[in-house]
Length: 116
Length: 433
Image (cartoon, rainbow over all chains, first blue to last red; front, side, top):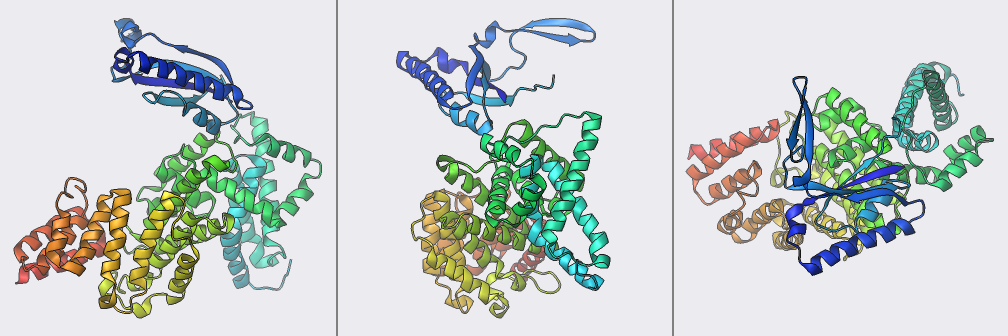
């Protein structure tokens, strides 16, 4: 199966992180990558880190017109900061691997809908 | 078939088959078809067929085999109909090994499946896989309990809805959503590996206990379904103890449930009113069950390896202290206080502290108990038991007016018929002085 791992986090944590904290965050991503590569039947199909939510541009349709606004679609403390796209045999394998990602993320795992 | 038996025997055989074979047969069908809805509906249909045939044609020699064959045929019919409609349905994830195993069997499949029904080791593994699937942490705790009751124990949706105090359509929707999520999210139908086992068994234990307490502490005390459900939860606990032998968490859970359930006949009067522990007729307790639970506790380790195991053992020992006291006055309250001490240190639970206050009041008087209740109001803002206990301790201290106020507060928060009657009686007593 294919899964997207959405990484939400408080952007100020990264902004205010010192050198050691940043190194640890990167090391956590590396450990996660190793676990994914070592797990049978599991591999990366994609993934990106995103720039902060203040760089987002949102488009909505309101009353038949499209309206463009500055900022993410929802104001929240935790913003989407990046994602991974994984091939994995099942949900348990994904959950075990993402344990290794930095602890300040809230992680949402969604299976890809391959029927469309 | 053994014709010549009358309809009464057919009915009894049906009830027995439902009780004994529902869970194992669902598990076998789930393993074979990898779809929870299909397995459940096909087996339900097989029981409908049995209801029609067994009373007149006689009970088959091998009821489980008969039901399995009927359910398998039904499932294949449904699959054919779906193939015609070309509907795509998500299948449960299974291990490659299981899939290959199933493929290798495809030639002699029908014969193999008949053998599977008779092979206890195979049935055992399939049931365990199903239990772990239903109790997967990807589902909300209440959905886990509902799904386990439906699939493993075969309770009807209507019964489960009553148990969790929701309407039948709501429960139907909850069960449907849970089944869909397991397949769509790719939760595997598999036994957890050694690393995840403790945590996953912990989740199963919670589900069983949630099912038990839903039956034991009724929202409406006059509902007989609830007592049966507590009994069903014990049946599930017993099954787990057989399937996962030697696990302290499972065994202590079983002991705790059996001890609490042993008092069921003494808990209410014939008019449905509640009888509190000290006033219960101990002759009505099921002493054979108490002896069984005490044997389970005696066999178990005094230092369980998991946290859940320790908690459950402490709770079971509290229940044991009550169950083995010949009269209420003989209760070893000092021991109970000690157990609640340990339990509170372990869990930090406000409910445990409330129970400790009750026990301490028995040892050191109502004032000591009341002191322990300080600070609990913020932590248990909706509990009716907190003002009920405080009222009781105030009444014992001779503070009738304050006691009556506490009983009034408890009544505002409580909607159980039997408990409300009790609270009203205590309020009346406080006001009468």
